[in-house]
Length: 113
Length: 108
Image (cartoon, rainbow over all chains, first blue to last red):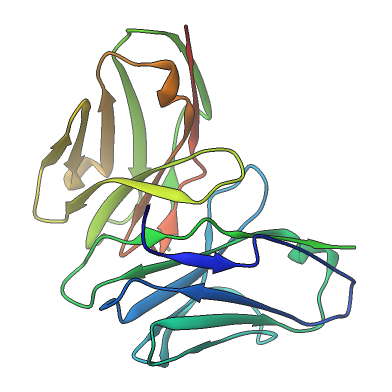
């Protein structure tokens, strides 16, 4: 039990649609990161939020966007879904101090058809 | 650009064997290195975190070492059990860069 929860667990969307994935971090963890993991691959860093501001981004287009809220929840939004967006989406939270341990949620499996 | 490599991609061992998993990185500016396990279709479970200034960390049957000069970390699993079967991933630089993982199968 990591204290990080994601919803929904599974989701099926049609190409071109928009999707919102949600994450609830551990209390006190002001840093949240989102990842995309394709089958058989390691997680790819999408972006990171610290105290509601984006402060790091991987090689993902602007149609991937996020929000972080003061109550330790966050969202990943993906617009204009493409078939290649089908993946496991993971969020992770960690404390602010130093280079801290990250705790991951169970992920949301997104299938785009 | 940092690249993280894990070799082998898959490993199968009999129960009770001691084993070593490898993680290599190209840039020594890693801040930290964290090992995870992932069961099929699930999220990541943290195993060990090594800060850049440390050489090793231990938790139960697991021991992780870090050698920044050679760009390498190893995860040692003692007395392997079938329940250890999973994919093991390493990540560096505050979990920004991940390897592709080693899929471990422990045969009863």
